[in-house]
Length: 132
Image (cartoon, rainbow, N blue to C red):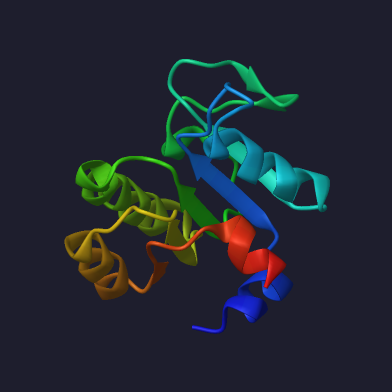
């Protein structure tokens, strides 16, 4: 997968686990992409607004047109997130790429995503890769 091409071709990102805490990477990374012209849909079951953006309680509620699902959840939750993403792709036809942030690894999730036609990146920071 050509990561440079991902940033050129895709501009709508749902962030699963976006944090309200401005000190956490799960807040600063999505805000960086907002500041660089990307559309960001925060997904967080306990917040209503983050960084001025409406928050969606779950992935199914987020607007259509998601290209990248950026995941900030522990590795042991990644499979469940991918199961939600696969269900959404079947229902709405979006989500082209699932990106597990640095330190998040799940080969089961990777297999499920790829079996359902979704590209998959894991254990890489979107922010760091963008800066490359």
